[in-house]
Image (tube, rainbow, N blue to C red; front, side, top):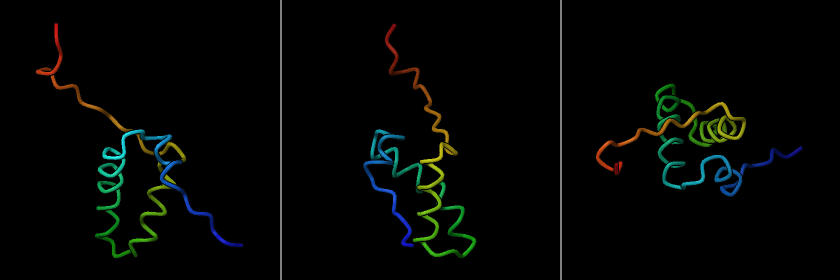
Length: 68
């Protein structure tokens, strides 16, 4: 049985901004790269974690951009 890959469209349903998606994925994967795993394995795991809602994106509010 062939393993099904997660598509970018599916990932964008969880994190709608593609730039945020790239940053979040990269930060998560960076920790795993140090352990010596293969890039494809790491990214598959990261994408699976995102789809399974195991990743929470916390947005910081910049007070200078808030209008009163």
